Image (cartoon, rainbow, N blue to C red; front, side, top):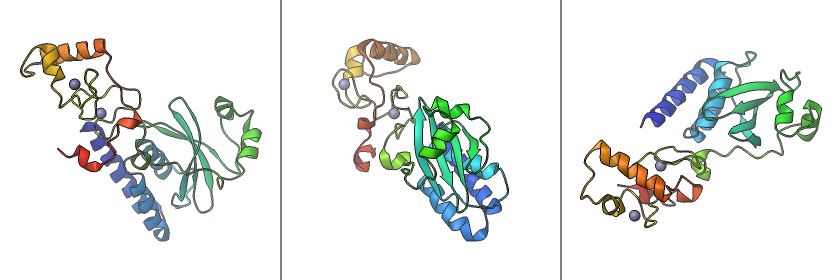
Amino acid sequence: MRLSKKIEGIVREIELFIQYGVQESEQQGAITLLQRYQNDALALQLMRSFYTSLPEIHEEAIGRIVFISKKNDIFLLGLSTARHAYLYLATDQKALLFGQYGQEVSDPEIFTLFGYLDAQDFFEKYPTFIDCEEYEPVSASGSRFCPVCLAAVGEYHLLGCPVEICPWCDGQLSRCGCRFEQLGVDALEDEEELEELERILEEKGRIPYAKEQRPSYPSAMDE
Ligand SMILES: [Zn+2]
Ligand SMILES: [Zn+2]
């Protein structure tokens, strides 16, 4: 699948940057954290942004990523190393450093976007990240993306994804017979029939990805 290939590429890129940019004593910790987030596109964007463009050369590994706030698709996350703490904005497409603890924030209006009065208000609420919850990787919480086609919560699956639920029978759309019944055919043979299926699915009310659809047991996905 294209998207997971892309994710693999990012993981490898980060590994390289850790190997060349992080001091040796911290490399093992950096790799362990990378493995923890290896399926989480958003955390990977954050790690890539950090390791490829450190504001100063500290050669430090990321110690912890914490969740602070979220506005629409944009996450406000904290990232700490042994001696520094940073603030990032991140989506699964991109991450952007916008502040470092102990330094002036370049774009303080960002705090108001997330509901804080100003930078001072924010730093009074978050003098450190100690009380913040860890940002949970998507594989552990089973949340934002379909594990097979990577549709986000609320989005339609790629047609044919085995996680998609059939709106006619509530079964597994890729396995139940409803699609043939509805189209009045024995098999789906060409692009036209696929398009017709997509059309009648949407007319019926296609079921977008939701967290609850995530299979509870890995064996349910074995095919
Ligand atoms: Zn899917
Ligand atoms: Zn069905």
